[in-house]
Image (tube, rainbow, N blue to C red; front, top):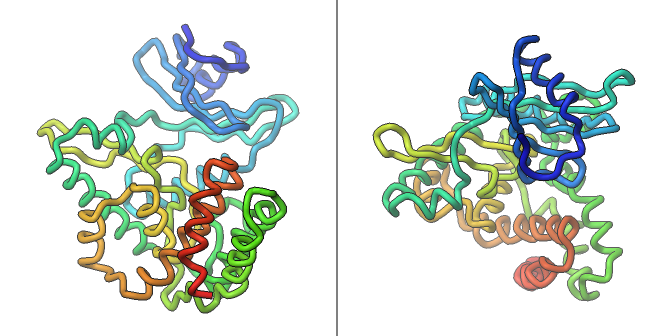
Length: 312
């Protein structure tokens, strides 16, 4: 039994299941989940009641799965809940598809949790999220860099150089489009050139999830009715400044004032964060969304560029 479109054959899915769960394991159903433009994401159901999440890319090798498995391992080692990695297949001539097989974690995304639990329980959920982020950000690295499985990615001594590198290609693509007025492109260009003074970071590189919006957080009520975060999903992890992560969470309403009050009991955000760094980071968040989703975010990016124009 299946649900949703899938161009992956049943025998292929059955083989993935048997490689993981044993020769006697039987696949009985799959359900398509929202996935990316390259991979297909499925929930696989076995006859014995077990479930797993499969991210699979047919007809090509996909390095991103190795990176995701590596990043989930880093986040798990920091003490946060993430799905267990059951299997990683990078693709081969004999099996010309790539996949990552993950633990199925029960829960609903953060927006659904907001609608289901009482306000006081959602506040408790936000406090739990803040505690988890403090734990994540306490994990440090040796350099500012992407958290990838391979060793070939560049490493930086300064955060602003790393951040500029992360967004160089994104900015170049958007700058060549016709989505932004000339004035906005000039403002963003000046920001991009002056990141050394706009987003200074004196502390050590800290582990960031990198894409914490509501859909990448699962939550559920425990046996006592208290809501808890059950998993962080789909990381785009790097070692950088936590300010970038917090600005992202603020922009996309992942974090509420209750979250920030809890977080700042341990790590205070000063005036420079609110006046300079947060607006700059949010400019880049929107820049990335314009590149990924097009004109629907162009108006928001233009408005954010007006906010930061006085800084440059």
